[in-house]
Structures are given as structure tokens and as C-alpha cells.
Image (tube, rainbow, N blue to C red; front, side, top):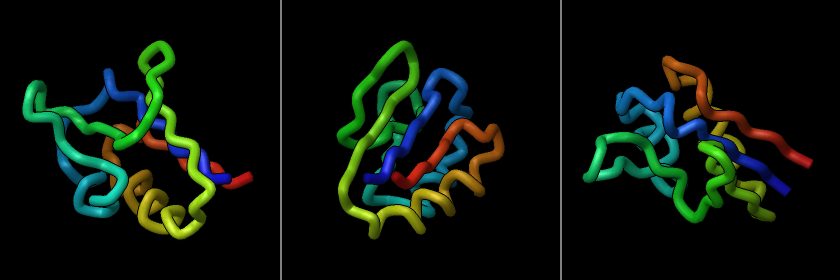
Length: 76
């Protein structure tokens, strides 16, 4: 299982996550912040749990590129 978490409230809208992982992230047209596609919101933490381990590399690149370090990726 791959668990990707985004602290959306702290997003500055730089778009790096979308460039690195366009299948998992997109920018909101409403507020210009990142959206973790198919995630569940729990108190400002948007979490995606996926059995697809092929997303790990792109999500880790997005996490490393994020200037405010609000993306985490864990494999279980």
C-alpha cells in the first residue's frame, strides 16, 4: 500500500507537484492550490491510499520538489 499525504492549507501554489506527478496532483481553479486526486480530507490532511506501487517514484519526486515540504509518501 502507498500512502500519500498533502497538507493543502500550507500549499503556496507553485505547481511543482503537478509537474512531477500529474496523475496524482492537479491545481485547483478556485484557489490555485494543489489537489491530491481521489484523496480523503481529515482535518486539512488530504490522504490517498493506493495499492498501486507504480505511483511511488513520481509522488516522491513531487514531495522532494515541494518548496514548503507538505507532501509525504510512505510505502507499507
